[in-house]
Length: 65
Image (cartoon, rainbow, N blue to C red):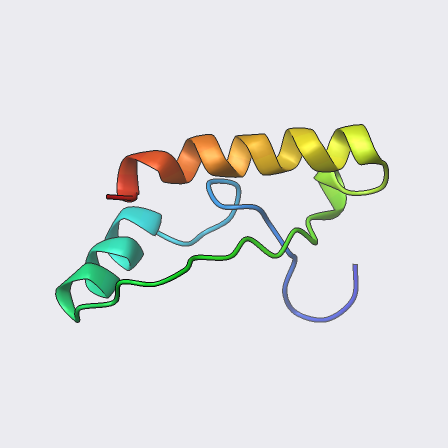
């Protein structure tokens, strides 16, 4: 851990993703949402990386139209 933040996958940190995604929709955003997978808990080997991305996808799916 270094710095004042920690990388976390969607649903594992402090961001209110429902509100965030709702705000994007309100302003007309209709483009890509990219997950930059740098969460140390789910990072380190291929299988953990895949599991982390699957968790993030499952968490964000209800907000994606």
